[in-house]
Length: 498
Image 1: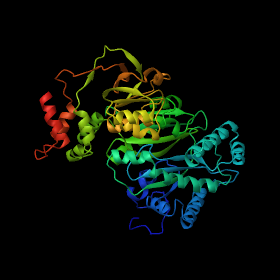
Image 2 (image 1 turned 90 degrees about the vertical axis):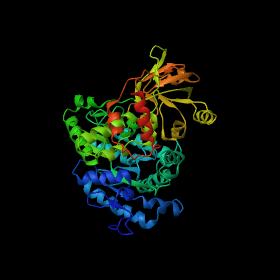
Image 3 (image 1 turned 90 degrees about the horizontal axis):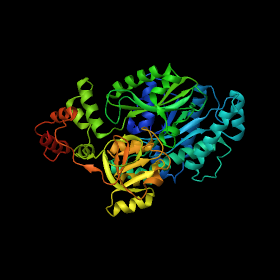
Image 4 (image 1 turned 120 degrees about the vertical axis):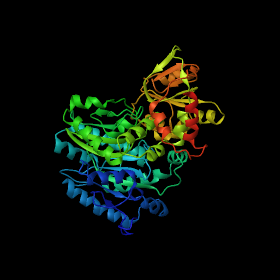
């Protein structure tokens, strides 16, 4: 805990007044706390900090009673702030239970939405709103989420006591810190063991509420190209997992303005405010309930290697960061990806096409089975992972693949976010039937154009194309930089090509 926190303070109200850090609160809760301090429209919430994760595991994967009593106290505060009651009518309070480590790990850990419902409270909710369809949809979503994440049993029903639901869901989120996908992600990104995940308990807002509701993800700049334009996707009458899971193909963010003309300008304003606060590209999750906008999370956005260069240079030009900071914003892995100069023979047969969500090109054998993908990759075979959509459990196989193709999903789906961050070519939304069409074939994936070609369609491009942003960034490097520095090596190769 920080020096401003009591050692016994195992639960923290996220009202913007607590002087805590990302390491204590985890990225999600820190973001909620900071945005509430800024006066942005964020649903009220409280958090169990990252240090409680170790306490939970040391206590035999059980939340100690004294911490649970603090949870109940903060739950009562949440009831007061929302004017709703957890576990009873006439206005039931529902909450989300979300993970959040100090470092951003999109989609690696677990979240439970709509918690606090029972069959009886579902009817109470329907009576309060006059909307049985919505209440039933919300109940069914909760049942699926609870069975999948908390019970790990597709047929399991949630407990009849909402407090039992909450205590179990908090434990399930802490348990997700030790799963294999988190270990693979942290190893790939050299994040070390880490202190654990925090848990954020937040009042629900409902993107599935009615025709003037929805949910989405936006980036303050294009994470694939770095262009300074608002970018993202959204789904009407949906909740957050519908977009990020990639199980549905969302609509471009600009279509928000067609349905909710008052909301889109507010999204633009909030994106600008948060980008200037972070001094970086930001990734913002939002929900609209019956025409009212809520912001749920903000973090530094994952970006493709070439986008990382352009964004860093543009932020220097705008006076938001220094040249030294710009250099530090491009990782060794991104520099290695930028050093590749392969291109595609565009006259080759196109087997499938979708949205280019992870720029770059790669050739490999199309494989849909996760275990087979890992085995082939271990034997030295380049693998293109093809799936209907990707989930966090797919991450170890994704990390061993040279490219990823999905039938469903958009540019803010799980597959797109993971691949873009590590410079892995990715095509999403290629259409149902793509897995069957590609599996077993050697294919070339162009994650820039969204095309999947038959066979090996790679070639070395002609000399002469010089990226002005890369040239400027490499000019920021001091003469004293070690020759084995990834960007120094890239500068040498870049000068030779130019």
